[in-house]
Amino acid sequence: MGRGRAAKAAVARLLGRSVDDPETAAVTRAATAAYRATLAEMPHDGSTVRGLVAMAARHTALYGFHTGEAERLGLGTPEGVAASQEATKHGQRAERILVTALDISTRLAEREAAAKAVAGTSPRRARLERLRAGAPTTA
Image (cartoon, rainbow, N blue to C red; front, side):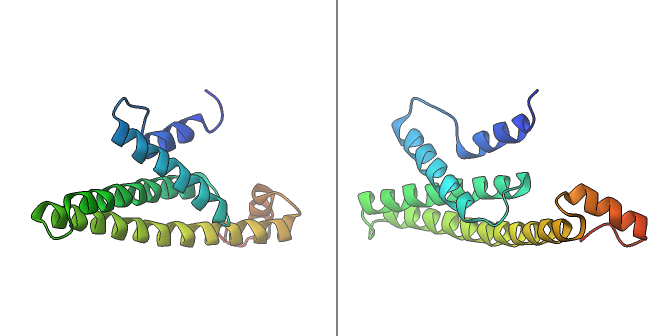
C-alpha cells in the first residue's frame, strides 16, 4: 500500500463518494472545494489536520445545502424552518471543527519550525537530539 494511501481514502470518505444522486453529488463537490480552499490556508497539513478539515468541509457543504433547501421551501414554512435549523447545526459544527483544526495545525507548524531550528531540517533528528540531551521529547 502506498504511503498515505489510507489517510487519503479516509479523507475521500469524509468528503463523500461519487453517487448518481445529483443533490448528493453537488454536496460532495462543494465539500471538496471547501476542503481544498481551507487546507491551503492551514499552516500545517498533517493527516490529523486533513481529517478535521475534511469533516468541517462536509459540514460546510451540508450547511449550504440545507440553507438552499430552507429558501426553496420558504423560510416561513414549517419545512423551511426545519431545514434552516438543520443548516444552523451543520454551520455550528463546521465552525467548531475549524477552530480545532486551526489550533492543531498551528501547533504542528510551530513544533516543526522549532525542530528545524534545533536540528537543521528533520523533526525526527530534533527529537533524537533532545533525547541525547536528556530533554523532553515532545515540543
